[in-house]
Amino acid sequence: FTLLILALAGMAGGYVVPDLDLKPTAATRRKEFTEVLTGFVGLIAVSISGGGGVNTAMLDATSIGEGWCFDMIRRSLDESFLLGESPWTGFERLGRQLNLLPLVELAGALALAGNSGARVVDTLRARAESGRDKELAEALSTAERKSESMGIPIGAMLLGLFLFLGYPAVAGLI
Image 1 (cartoon, one colour):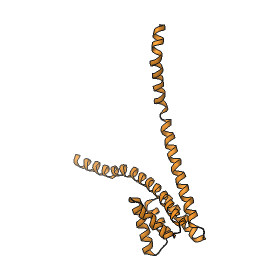
Image 2 (tube, helix red, strand yellow; image 1 turned 60 degrees about the horizontal axis):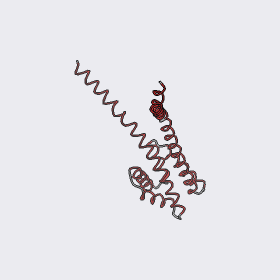
Image 3 (tube, helix red, strand yellow; image 1 turned 135 degrees about the vertical axis):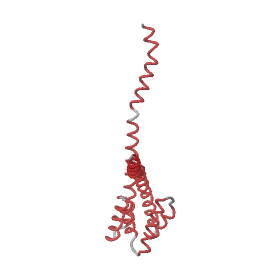
Image 4 (cartoon, one colour; image 1 turned 120 degrees about the horizontal axis):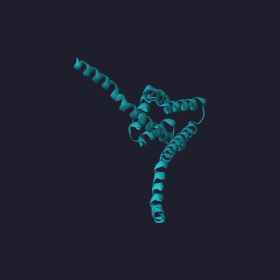
């Protein structure tokens, strides 16, 4: 009977424990991918401004970058080219597969710009600027949160300093 209880407890633990590690890791990797995507979009905009086409600019940008994020983007572009579809269709598919809203939004914006005849480089620049602004806002909020949490330790240190400096005067009066 105890063996059955241990087996059930082991099954329950084996079902729950991997999720405890996987969810924070996935959130970290999604954030990393979003940051890399901002840089990738900026590289594409610079390459297009230099006179390259959209497809060439995307291939150049993926060849410059390193890491798992650029490997995923590169694979998505290769798959799109092999299937004969636009790169943003591949981006949308990858974004939905990885549950990355910024990549799906980028694909939608590029598709809209491509279909409406708008300049793709303007769309890319706006996306890159928006991504950088968002990253800056997140960094500022993190820094503010950390500096707010330092209020109590700094106050305690100042109180200790005043007690240390004031003790001889109080002791001399008493």
